Image 1 (cartoon, rainbow, N blue to C red):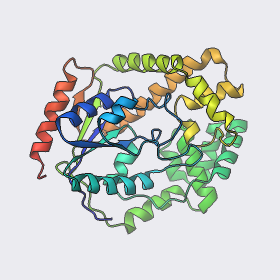
Image 2 (cartoon, one colour):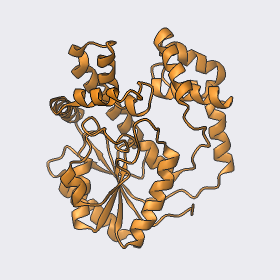
Image 3 (cartoon, helix red, strand yellow):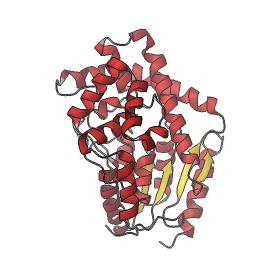
Image 4 (cartoon, rainbow, N blue to C red):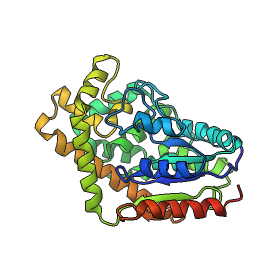
Length: 321
């Protein structure tokens, strides 16, 4: 892979911040193709709980990296980086603007920084870790991680099940701590980091967190009304999916799966789903705030769309495309 990619524009933000509408508005003004930067939209048959763009939105502008993977098979940042880089070059070669849109911050990072040489996901090991965690709890699993990989454990909260599980999976499958693999990759892989002129990022962030919380609640209610539970029932009916898969760990799907498993009461589904989505948004905002090169748009501002369009015009005009 070449170190330097053609100019591309990114739109990032927390869930429910209005990324799709903003991207479509920019794409209408500039001849664009959209590359999804979303670890859930890659899965086929997962439409309601991922807030997948509607058919007319997908038809309005060419979209990529949506519905490319069966929920049984994992998709990771390394795959995204390779495929997105290929798409960016192809879209630019067609004389169009590559527009990267989504909320999976690790995927954005994968395009800008060297990727860790990590072992592939192992569904059997992950399932065993999940069973163990159900028995003893994630804080105890965190304590286990601290014994084999203290550096990684020190930066993870005891309840961060996804990252603790992945770190333990790496240790059990490769026999090497996650932190050691990350250090090796940083030392071994030459890298030319993308700069703000080459790959500017527009970040949609709320000034008032309550505004985002209200939108999250409204969207989750709409998902339930449009058949989220039935969608997960259909996925379970296949017989080959299980709760430890990355696809079924997506926010919303995980909470519904627990209800259908009988481990969580239906009456708590709405509250748990909204809470999990809020926590996801909080992590996304924290990650964005660690990126000083971003161009922030207040997504709860009454003129947020006009501000985003004006920023896009300025950034595109300032590029050397």
